[in-house]
Length: 357
Image (tube, rainbow, N blue to C red; front, top):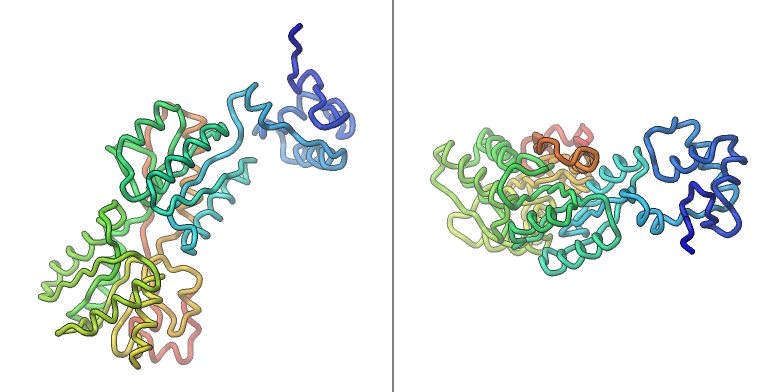
């Protein structure tokens, strides 16, 4: 004979503790307990907290896997990034988790290491775990057809930082092209005419936008020197790239870097050759990670707002989950240039002022 194991019928999913036990302990209805367990927004925060205290006190453990088979939501999002070692992604994931925590969601984080094959494996596993949606920083070489695959799976997806496929799609990122323009405008204003760009070895959207910004700014200022050095985007790459550039004739007087990690490597490379960043060669990074203000010298960087990008990406995903047929939305944040010692513009002021945070 079939048996109804719905929590609303008081099924004992955690030892001998039932939903009715929790309801009696908290002084609410069994239906309210069920709503709290399903992270429903219909429950007042004060009531939710009271029920959660009773759940903890009684030692009840919600069988979310069984609940997912009965319902349509798991209150989970999959998050796939391509370089978990980069502090940018630490800040971005913190923003994602902050936004999700406010509505009772949690995230599952995976690192694709820029491998489409590895990325595909993670996406399939997240689908098996019935996540409600995906926040995807597409790995380099991801086929545009992946968007169609996720749609066929009925798995809402928000692309983050990079994008593939044909618009419209849900997307959260920053204006990388404008960020590079801001950096070069600043350097030109301080007399630099030989400005190189370091980093980016593949043609994904975020690299293309940076390179486009570099070429546009160089042309707009009528500079005869143009040097775009492709590389991957680690400290080592920045270290090796600046050594190569310094050996050229003419050498650049300033470099703009794909991210802050490359910039840190470039500054170290200058220092290893007895040169001073901001004096012998200006250096500007991208992302404005926390370490930028604490480095020696403090790194001038284009702030791309990773925490806010994470929050916006999570918001878009939750909106898509709740409104599957709503209009697609793209959120592109405006970058800001944080001027510090490494570009040479504030060497005098830096002796008496704290670095810009």
